[in-house]
Image (cartoon, rainbow, N blue to C red; front, side):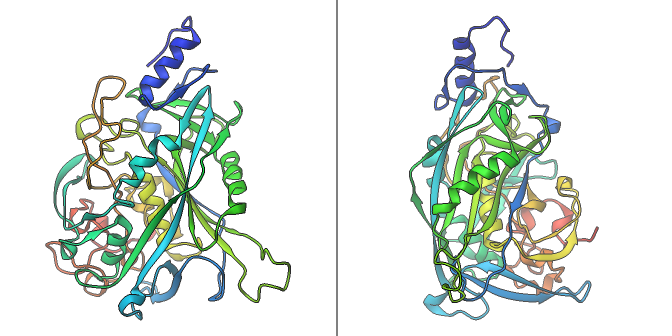
Length: 431
């Protein structure tokens, strides 16, 4: 959507509201959104910080494990959120983490993108509401479009689970009647407003006319860091935005980071020498609710699954498997996510970004895109997640994860056989 240069600010503002839906808020726009070609809209995530923790560290509930990678003989250690699935029993396997959700109202380029507008849709999504993960009506196929669904986490059929709970249970084969759970309890905190200077961000627009923000990653990170000073280190703060993305270069089009998670060493808060090893380490995540049609083409086309909670599910899954941003593994590379290059981090969402499935009922922003096409389909679109056995190059008969739906052996991603890419039917390969 291009607006003639002689259009008034009111006409431009009205067009921007239409491009984001009735929940966008326009004032006097300072510039016309920059059109970004679909080929340049590469979704990615980053991590922030990193911290070493002790058993006495004041932080979220977590456990430490280690596994030897048979491909190189190296033993890798890792911290994960929740209870240790190899040693816990009974009620001790059931962990609930408090998630403090802060909606952020972002004022940029004369448009207000308000995280409060997508709060209800996020709370109603599989991230916090429960669903049966025994099957899914649709999943990504090999050309990244919408394909047929089928059995998903078949051993948990009939169980009502949150998304991250279902993912962790599949990862450690703690399905069916298992008492193992990682539950998230959402708490909504007061919204905050961030006004973006014109030299730090602006508006961008996809080929379907959907408008979002592109903000400098360094500047944005400093704003999130400032919010961390009052967070509870035993909770997960989740900073929620609406169609806000980050760029790493000088151009608005050098995007798009859709979310990140990280840590902040919060200091002892009691004065030096007074914590007795209980100094706090704060974990946190920021992610955007992604409007239909920004990435997702019409009618289940390319990037079909990259909408609504895709970025949120990516960051929370990565936080759960690498909460302190210090879990390293044998470097991996995958053609499904070339934007990450060769990397040696255990970030479960990075290899499968853009790959997902349908779950739950979504009634928010399900109308047509501004150009008249339709990308929304009445469902939420969680991301698939690569599981620990994939990173550690474990053979399928020794992964310790939930068995695949049809093929023998354990699965390497949550979707198992529904993930159509050969690189996830076998362990990761090196660089």
